[in-house]
Image (tube, rainbow, N blue to C red; front, side):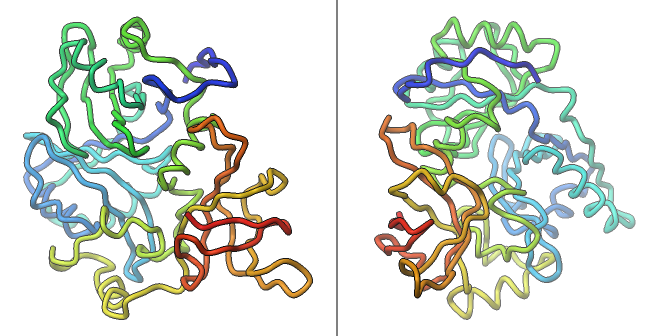
Length: 329
């Protein structure tokens, strides 16, 4: 992954921003049983996907704990799974141990493609100018091709950050040409995507979690705050379905991932405790998983994602971090 030039530290998000996310995982799934097999091992309805469509899902174990947070994109002869860096190390052995006689193959294609994220309201028009008919695409819909000007393997609308967000996969030998094309078209290049303050600020503001940081194998699927996007309760049986259905019947989990706005920058460390009141009578009610300065509005405020007891995980609730007040968004 290349180090790209960083724009001004005072950058306001008023254009199309381009992040290098090429460390993320891309897995191709082929074989005539691919749809049926994957449908049986994740939380969303894979069987409903038509070529050009996609969905968000969790891969869970028998106890309903999350082994992976994935995005599935259907093409005519394959499914493509997209996830965080090194996800293949966990997911491929998990899937392959259940393959008996099924015709299904998993191939890690991560090293073959450069991946970038184009973010912001102007991004749709920018891609149209490059010859890509993307205006009518809904979230998780995609094109399995690029254009004469932009040599992409796929262009996927994911909207992770609220505003139009495009995940663009490019053959590795076309990386330089593609980045040059995008920047000439008006995209503003930022530094290494997954580690930049702006990237984390935008995703936290939108409530978008990262597996391995905000979600781990210790979490039940419904704790991650992505139930409406990533879990189908009508799709039928899959590994982990019983505990997930039981939680749905109960109506709640004991803790929930949510967003916080903080009044102090002194907390800026992951795993910081969240309390119900100021000291000395404070009780721990949660833990921060991610934090960043808010660069969306250019304001001197700080945002975080944290697991809180469900009774506190409601918009407007007041909690405390490092002795300072914080609000649940």
